[in-house]
Image (cartoon, rainbow, N blue to C red; front, side, top):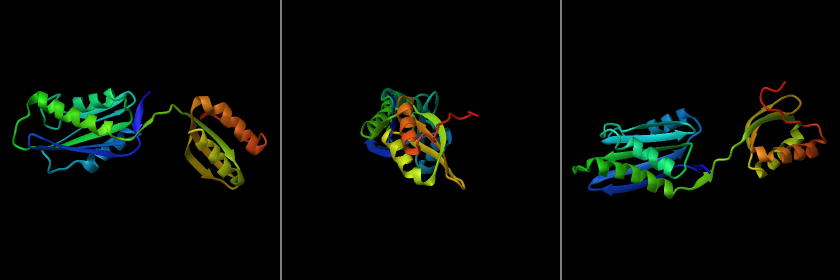
Length: 197
């Protein structure tokens, strides 16, 4: 089962006088990864190497290190630990001693590995998008039952008569949740998949 990070994490080490700081964070879209990299890269560092993975999409860069010695080992660390929806940035300040290509790959991949190993992780749950409407008085209970089933409220719009909710819930929880909504609303609330008429 793939995992993502609960929140940002950090790992620091010094290897033959070069300083390395590894930063990692969860992402939900490619622009999250790019903004994390831009926000945390240090322009005064020698190299800002990174990799991110988001389902079938992934990117990595060596940022001036010899080809294949930084970005790919970072990406390999993400995949080896079964992470998805994460970005990892490894910042290096050169200390004057050459590490060689093998040493660089071990430093970048190792830093990413150690950072991810000690980080809090949560399983990535496959969720189905659904929508429905409820009254203001039903909203608190509707949200409570959803969170008990590990579902998420993705959007809510307040109207004159109630609330339109877009949610995401595990496929195995849909029947249970529909039954709970039916109990809460005496059969009035019906869930729809996006695009239903």
